[in-house]
Amino acid sequence: MRPFAVALAALALLAAAPAAGAANLDRLLAPASACPHQTDLGDSAATQRRAMLCMTDFARTHTSRGALRSVPSLARAAGRKSADILRCDEFSHEACGREFTYWMRRFGYLRGGCFGAGENIAWGTGSLGTVRSIFRAWLHSSGHRENILGPYADIGVGLRVGTLEGNRDAHVWTEEFGTHRC
Image (cartoon, rainbow, N blue to C red; front, side, top):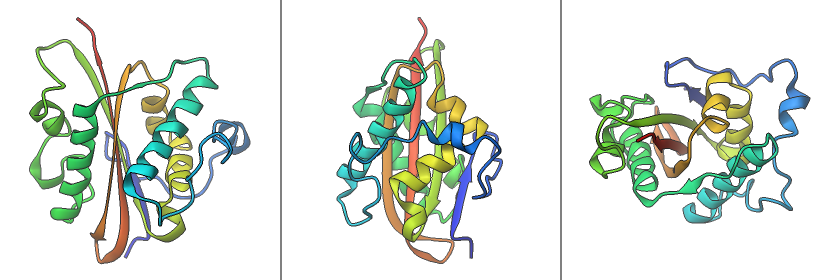
């Protein structure tokens, strides 16, 4: 059983070991005073999702990028992606055989051919499933960090808790990023 996993759009896995220059990246982690509720797994899913959005915007602001707009259709898409991962017991950007943009299209965010989209997924149990732990792992992964700090305007954050790969109480996180270019 894997207690923790993170994947990129390219489906590469990230080990939990910090990368070189970790202190530089850790400056992008919001303190609890700026983004409360980042370490309590007992908080409601809505509270934890707000904390993840706060962490994302903190990192963007501290690298001279603007905050992202929280878009309901992307939030629904992110929630459904996390649910698919649990339902199909498949930690993948293509969980249940669906391309990573499936739910973004289904909820009407992606329309036409002029858009940009990205996705971060992660899961963890215990302290490895907290907002802070997941966000720190994403920051230490170049692909995830590129999504967080990328050219996107919109975001949706999803969290579902369930059993994944035999691990109970797995916190499955999804961040959906998007922008309309037309």
